[in-house]
Image (tube, rainbow, N blue to C red):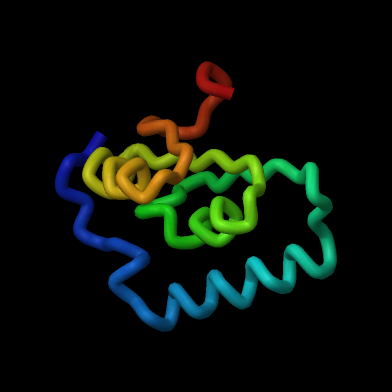
Length: 88
């Protein structure tokens, strides 16, 4: 796993806004109060932060330690590993 992955989703205002709008659309059209969310390749938790703030049970899988650690600092539930049969 990489400790120096260079891209943080939160460094892009466009991506922050995009994921906020996408979350709003998903919540309106598909989610229920008991929905559970998994994001594969969750980067620094920018997308999952929307679900966390709305009190959805959420989990991210992120193999890059540096960005996964940033997710954890934001209070995002994340597994620092690749998504695979073993950790499902």
